[in-house]
Length: 125
Image (cartoon, rainbow, N blue to C red):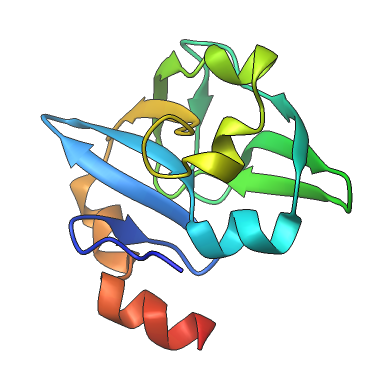
């Protein structure tokens, strides 16, 4: 199972890749493995704002439905449209092709609550 050192993580298994005031967000390798085959992704609209902890997307797998939570407050600046036709990208490439949204970061302070790769690894042991 892959955990990348250059990412931040949430206790609810989202990953965050910061870049210039925005961040790409997806689910971890551990999360996609637990969900098994993802068959549908409900993406938020671009421009929609979310507060930290709000549900911003939903993943349906053959096994269950999982909610994706905003790891911080911000506005959706981009969504991964490829997931509409290929939701399985989240399974095959959770950190690259299978990213879910990109959000603006409204409050840098909220990022302090995110976990390092090492801290996340301890949670899923």
